[in-house]
Amino acid sequence: MPAYSRPSRFNTVIPSEIVERVKQLVLVSNHIVITCHVSPDGDALGSSTGLCAVMRALGKDVRIVTADCPPRSLCFLPGVRDIVSATRQPELAARLLGEADLLFCMDFNSLKRVDRLAELVEVSGAKRVVIDHHINPDIEADTIISFPQVSSTSALLYILLYQAGWARYLSRGAAADIFTGMMTDTGHFSYNSNDPDLYLIIHDLLRKGIDKDNLYKLVMNTSSENRVRIMGYGQYRMEVIKPHRLGLITLSREELAEFDYSKGDTEGLVNTPLAIPEVTWSVFMREDEKDKVKVSMRSKDTFPVNLVCEECFGGGGHENAAGGEFQGSLSEATSYLLTILPKYDKYL
Ligand code: 5GP
Ligand code: MN
Image (cartoon, rainbow, N blue to C red; front, side, top):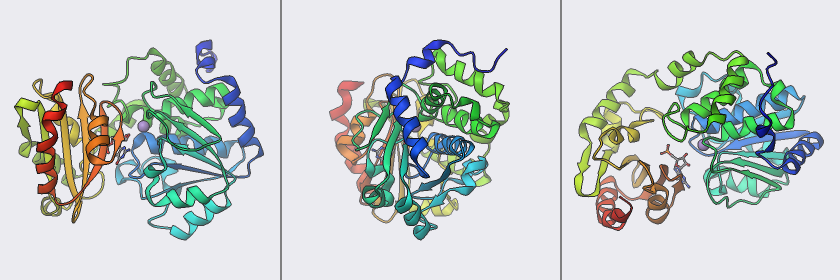
């Protein structure tokens, strides 16, 4: 059976003139840079490394530049080792962005999301292509491929590659990158994952030779000892605020230090309270620095955590998964959260 006998509906997802424009931009560009959002997750990294591998297969000079380093848990993805992060290599990051004639913006809808890279991106003369699935893109670009109805940027990238006739350049490694993004943004196909086309994409990726079971083990089921302990501790300390159907987990700087926390150790912790039928939404607050609390939220059904994050924590995201930040101590963040809860009862 030919590997690319996909139904023709894949060919009509992205308007053909947009696909042609991207192809043209790639054709005439010599120095391509790919970037994604700060604190990159599996989808941001998978879509970036997957695209990077395809651009390289097309003979392009291409690098991935990110604001900060990828989490250790995703460093098994082959392309991740070549990523230039502005925290570790600021001069190289600036030079690559300065020289770029084409910039792909993966998995973000606003320049705020590239953090310390925002200024370099803004002054860069490169043409911009945005490939993203967050609502209301607020970013200037030559081409915007924004599909909030697609569950991951990685799946959207696959569709673009397919429509552009570039899926044939996907190596097994690049197929694994795309699968990783699709898997992490759907909680291993446990939410936002009823679209049958997702499984047609997975079919193609399996035909590229990916070891899906091993990728699941590496991404969803591999933890350091510290992570296993911190996840247990966080859940043990969870508070359930019944009148507001909220599960709340907080970790202070002292607690993080006690568990020798490193980036990625609390990935997925915010999802755990949702297992409780009486809980509709969950909040995880982590005191990353003095007076700086990272806020993550998850929800069920139509409870809009993106709205809560936008209105109260200067952030955003998706209806069921969003994040933001609080400037102040963890106890101030907690008190503040408790004051805003009644405002959102109407969505329960
Ligand atoms: P997480 O809770 O895993 O950090 O983020 C979940 C989702 O929320 C991300 O995929 C992203 O869409 C969004 N998000 C997280 N943090 C922020 C933030 O600070 N600002 C905005 N605009 N979105 C965020
Ligand atoms: Mn994503």
